[in-house]
Length: 403
Image 1 (cartoon, rainbow, N blue to C red):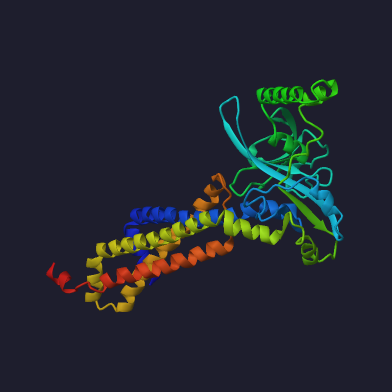
Image 2: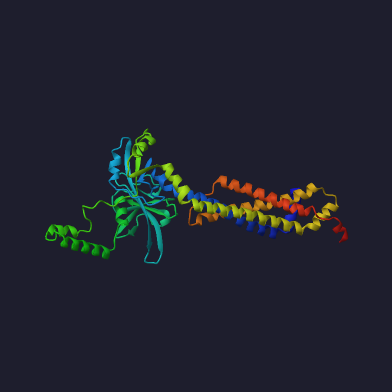
């Protein structure tokens, strides 16, 4: 009986193929929305997963560096290192940077600081090169930044050597990430323009001259320095704790819960805050858009099958006149709808195979997603076949005799 459906398709093969291609393009968008959602979840959680800390210590009553602003003193790492069960502490800071090259190209990325010398970046997924070996002027960049290994990249006042290239290390917003030592990161983050530094230095010297220390040459010399040793170092976003093997996470967390200036999260909680908070609105929007596309696909396929049925009403009436049973007409319509859905599904897969890698954000489509789309397409095809079948069964054999 499939032969009957194939013969009918051959009768107008060009229109059938073009229809399947158009519908396949629509289904490819449904598949892309699924992949974009999966990619957003991975992009949002790749940093906490890669850093691999047991606990994240952040500013009191804040939800961590990924959800909102968090500022803790650098010296907090030394206090935390004295806690029983803590094997290593790592300071963490990250911020967005946007630069315009001399060629007029805008480059946006997120710079993150690695807590040298405790953290060299060995846990990063390196595709080329190595981790940091020096405390200054070396960086590890994601491949999407298009920085060749061994090249020089200027950030702020200094040029940094690209010693390593990662793949897939991006922020929750999809910006590629760049890793330097935390000292270099804080220098970049707190850098001031030359004129701003000059004005601040002159104002500081003026305040010293007007004070009781104005006659002391040593005081004036210290006031003229760009960085005052008496000032505390810039704060960081969080401190990561790596616990000793076999150490209970909850016991260390319970001990730290009594500290009045910090809040402690596990890595799983940081991931949950990212998924349910930072990307939740975008996730829901993509989900609604995907549902809308599925509904549109069902409507379009139903209209296509209905139109195909209208075109062969005379042939269906002739089949009835020849004594064909209803099951013959039923299989003809349903099989054509399934063949249309199958070809559309294959087109969607081919488009995704060749096009999704060109998207600016990560698109992850798994076998489960493809299977789910196949089941959806099968359901839509059957529903569209039922729509066409209702029209097919209304074919009147008397019209053939009248003609």
